[in-house]
Image (cartoon, rainbow, N blue to C red; front, side, top):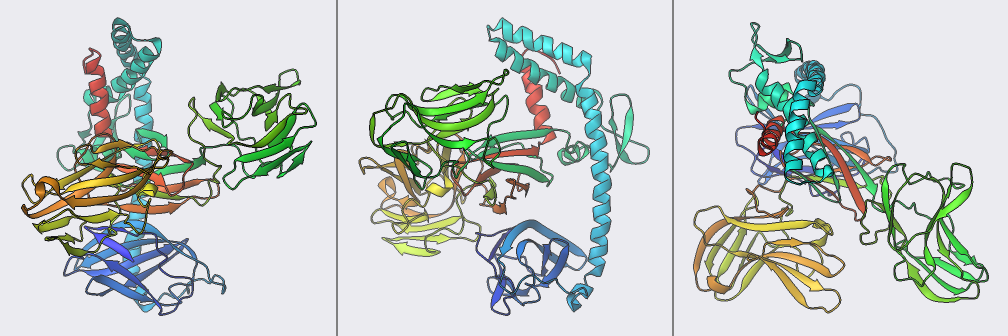
Length: 622
């Protein structure tokens, strides 16, 4: 089932159908589709494309799928298209997975279906659009090169750097802070100077002409009056990139022009698994590798230095440590003295040495690594009773909670807007209790009507049958804010509550409307469910309001938006291309222990505003 709202489609990740299913599966689009439009699903698998005409239903539109339409297995790109006379409009593109059947793959026939033949005119237009897009991309690349030339303009850079250094040093800031200010100012001077000193102008041919560092040049983009924010982003597409990393990332300055966000995932714990050594007894010590990658050992050592190898260069797994990167090792802090993670390496003279570590231990890697291993130092004759260690090496200077190694291939990446509450909610669409009726609307808003005679609630995420159901939507160590907004007018409305259970004591605590911002600590708490409720000062108060609820990253509640989510699966190398879904995006995965890295096109207009303010704050002029 595909959800639709306001020309945006998404899915909850269910399997739509399996390869060669025949007239037993339907592709359903559920939502308030505008009246008077004809609807078609455009499907692409690799180089093959098909068009599936939909029939109106009570809940939206649908088509019964045939084996011919499901002849291929794999990742399907799907887009919904509406037509009304000469009007044509498309939704975003989402990806769904059709699992293979034992019959094997087959190609869609070369002779198109009767309906597809009627679509040839659309395909011709599509090809023309693709060629136009290619030309636009070339123009954008030229503009990007021109802006790079401007960035390197010595006069503007020098002036901005001087202002920044004077400001930073005058305030008693550190050299590191001064350098950060200089970098900001250099970028601000270059970009803002380019835009303000040589703004785009309309040429005699009616196109926008932009400054290339020496003169104005035709951008190939037709003008439409004043330069708008959208036109600015079009003219300077790809000129300004942004990057971010984290278990969950919020991007607030994504270009409003739809583009592909480059995403890659990597394991937080870089020690490859399975380990080089297998569970065995080594010189009197029995090592057991647990399901989570931790290692439990017991016995009496018959040698002074008893070692269990996690990784060796003699194996088939590449070196997991990169030169010049700062790492932190941890996992043996509760073990007896002498037990630790060690790194064996070869120095410049070819001698084999090792890094003797504390718990935790941080270093900048410059070594030719030969091995990573657990060592029981000076252990001959010592007896160990079921000692468990949690070997972890991660990027950065801080040791975080242990996570086992994650293979970056086939990880599900989720691209949200900013609202992280999945819709449909887990509660009933319409439920009445104790005088209050909660009704879920198609756009995710909730109508609350009636007079509560006692405490009453509806579950949005999780229920008493699904404990810890909210945890997959939260990442450890991240900060979130929940807000409820009365969109029907007035300030009176229901409250929200998130239930937490202390893992050690079993005591419950809550995140509520009076303290809506919280930082996740999964080592201490189980995060159970998110509910909307009427109680307290709202008892015996007549209510009739429509509210929206939003869970978002950060410390502040921002303007509400409907839930949206598209899912992607990474390739063997851990990469995937993600289509930008909104100016504010949240990227995450369905797997703990994974770090997401991304590169995206920034909104050039927001960048100008931010960099201009950076110069002004340091006493400069723009």
